[in-house]
Image (cartoon, rainbow over the protein chains, first blue to last red):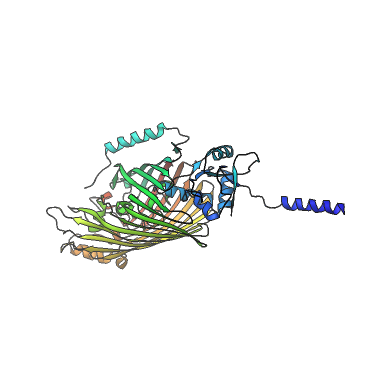
Length: 140
Length: 405
């Protein structure tokens, strides 16, 4: 009986840990009061067409360089876009004056620091540690 | 009037270039504060042809008069307001001599946000036309060293590029995808002599001026922008202001284009195709004017393969027929001969097979190599061949280095 329970717990733990863990977390400044974004809205923010959070506050978008593996994972897994598509969207806007480029940071450490220090910021990292002063945003 | 690249503009280039290089090479795009951004681009190409001229006397050896230099500033003081302006200097053979000009400068106000967006722009705005018109001068954003002449005909470039006016735009998000649209009322700018060669077959003593025109575009993005389908249409008009003694009367020319655009994006491939028909209408140019209304028909198909991260190869077939009803220009030959100004039919078409290779060693730099095999001369500027005429069959090799920040 006891062995059965232990086995059951072990099975549950194994099942949970084998679930496909997302390699990227979307993060925001802790003052952002929105825990969830739908995919269309998140795409609007990261393609720099949407300039506000759903509650009206100004959004600041931070990204990693195009060739950063976490940027690739974020583009494809979260936004369902290839990184070159995002770059084309930004370029089209930046060089026709119809929009601005996101703020590019060099590393995940800098991403965490800038997002934690900029009210209204949104960004992404591979992994968030419990003590990181950022809010995790669910995109679905 | 034909203008040549002057030493004055070369000096301006040197000044601009040294300013650019004076900045740190590491981070050229910067936020003075987060809401203000500065970006720029430059490119230099070299052209070699066996016959005909591109970017200078390219049939006598490498020609280097193909250069672009631009910088822009944008400021978003508030999420709903955007102010932006771009200065551009461009050299292209005898058609463009590096004069510094305002490429665009406008204020953009967002009127509605959320899942559906609406906004208005006022000022000098880039014309949304086909897939690539708004950023055709930025090497990194165009689909090759030369734009497909079928849709982005350089001979009437300034007429189609950007214009003062007002524009309303919107974005609607639905279960299928995103619909973007834009509608503009504008007054086109016409400054290049080449537009007179397109309109009148010669450099006339008077000058052309833009008239109130409109352009509209709808672009549907499906399946996470894997598919982009667009339609652009409008009525672009200009008026001829005759000189004191002039065979022509003050008439107007209308270009009424419809462009169908398709882009398909895959992880390593992009396919693009665009088709246009432009109804060209001449009004009130007087009895000495020999041309009649016609329809220009043109299209291209292109495949781009990103075979390595930083490398791409592309192939394109690009066809332009100035007169749909006279594709090879036979009637045109007879008409111009009867008028005592015989011109060859190959001025009315161009069929261009292009292959190219691009390498981006860093996010800022891009190096390209492109080869064209062309039949017909409709894509070539007449002013680059004066006092003669361009020939029918010709090949072109292009090299380009470009930087952007």
